[in-house]
Length: 296
Length: 296
Image (cartoon, rainbow over all chains, first blue to last red; front, top):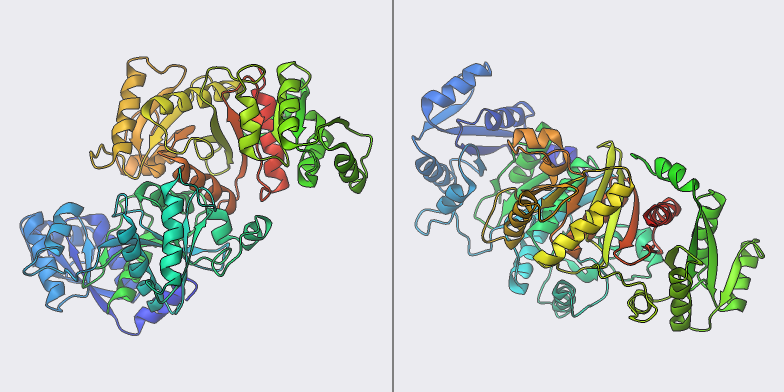
């Protein structure tokens, strides 16, 4: 798969059901409705029945969706998680509830969606300049990952790329420079991750680092800087040092490069879709599509 | 000034002289020669006389430039710095010498170019989507700035924006989120910098933060996320948390958004131009132009 259209085609084969938690959110309903109209998902709306109904009437689609009543963010989150864990829905989607409340329900030890894996965020970019999907992790969830957490971030992202049909994605651990500099721990950990891959502590992918942003993505930059290896110039997944650097890349690829971008939370028993109010419609649709693709 | 053409027009009024240190570098000579051909600078070439001459002959421009002989990177750096400190050249430019060697000469207490200010890196982007120059600091010099260093980074960048004709640039201290989160020290320091500005500890600009990348640059994102203030949606300068995050933004704006980008080292008595081998010709020309504009 190289474009979101490829993803749409794949997920139409088996339509998945979204549980929109906090469906008092007009924008959330719009996004879900677009996905349904595009034929890529079905949906359940969870929230205050009267408010949700009012939203549906506003959009002239009252009666199109089943509403599950919940009178607070906490009860809506619990209801959404239980619908997914019981198999009545496949994808958990954040509407008008705080992320922290939704994730607390996800992590509930009794009825939550814990899988033992680290919950992590992956941005997937249809990078038209590079003719492939580029993954960026983690610009949305883990503030400053430890080395162990970086391994988990790679595993979650790689597993998702397998679902996109890329059996052996190339992971670049990127930093400001492509050399090991003891004053930049990020470059040291990048080298450690590359070695862990060599020793088969990380599998199902190719890992190299440290690489620069430019010589990870761009073959010409790799060639000029004489950075060799299987990943340089051909990276599929960028492992970033922290949430800020990852977030900036995603936002820059969205707001400046105008690439189509989706985001997804991985590592739970079911995919979690968290879109931003400022996302354009196509970004919200892309995120939902990633969610559908991530369903086991 | 909104474009590099505006910068070129301005610096043509008073042509500045580049001291290219390590002129054994064919690419460096090409860049300098382009600047001379564009009428925006003159140049002196410092390096091994025979090798430099061979390069000039290769480009069929032997005799066009004065060569100052130096038989090592250390002596070339010393010669270059002294030419600038004595007023025989205006801009120090790195050719085929290590950055560390060149900067050691710059910082020499006896004959260097120390000014007492922090040496910092500023990327200046002609951001066609935003109809203005965007500055990014520091993605090239200071690995992980302290709060005090962030104040210096802002001062250096603001002083440069004044030279670009922007009397009161808007500085956004950006992070992954636009709220103060104690688990993200970057957001706490961003708020501290905004307060320091309110108390007039930072002047000549407007400072706000924390802001996200999107709501700093884009008025629509600021409006949707209800982020208000003088800077949101209209930032001229992005102060980034560290060298990695700043480097990634610059590279992404170059390799993905295809904005024209230049970089410059500020804080010494004279501007220092350090271009990358992987930079395109227009990026090298832009960096030289920034250097010429920065001359006092």
